[in-house]
Length: 130
Image (tube, rainbow, N blue to C red):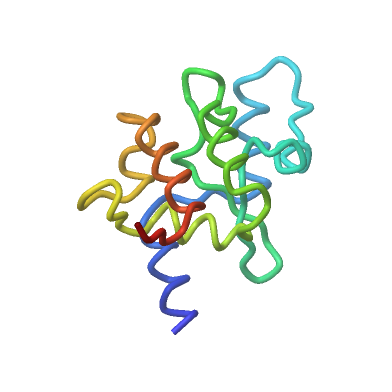
């Protein structure tokens, strides 16, 4: 079941390998010192690992900012505060959210980032009873 869920996540978006991300940055920046490790450490982006290779969600990279992560992503990841693994975050982004109606967070990340942030906050509240 986990393998099926991971395959669904992989098919739901374009994922870019660590080395390919560095190549994109080398082509778009004068300074090629892009360090995805520091992005992860600083909570700017998440990654998933497959066969000991790291992949980043392409939907999280802003082409208007030379493919650095969208700023809203850091706010969303801060809400999760390390409670989800990279795969856990990827599952959340690719899953339909009751808070967002029939949409997944990744589908609305660019068009309605504040709603996605609110959905992350709602996710962390869990089920509440009145």
